[in-house]
Length: 199
Image (cartoon, rainbow, N blue to C red; front, top):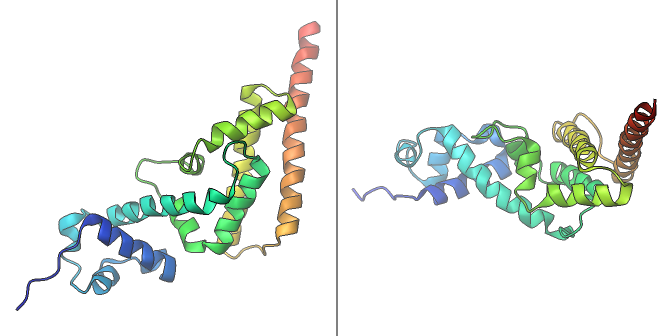
């Protein structure tokens, strides 16, 4: 009887990512993975300690795909509203990969913002632009950025779970409204502090 084919960790992760992309996260089981690789599930665990570890390896590959998806952005001076639209678009058009990246446990407790930051110096550049355009402090611009991301990831999760209907124009208008409100709140906070300082 010929020996079973052996696969590297990366080869297994690639197949795992294909399963997630095509059939969803719930389909990523040892049995399905073994069947795709043409072997029993047992050899998988010579390369990985658990299916969670397989999922994390697939997640790392998915981050590379997210970088490619984000390549349409001008990452030298990104607008937070455009970044938010990218998040929603990813949730709609790469549904299962969005779930894998942003709706699952990460190996090191990585937050969605930290995952997003891994596609480039996106966070810092967005914050810098908010600072420049809205005359806010770094701390205030950071709060605006983080709250915009919370709104985007929340909306993305609703879209991913089919709990809201995606309309690009409506979502873009909502982001503009939320952004203006957050900036006004940050500026108002500055004005209040300045007034209190004079009393």
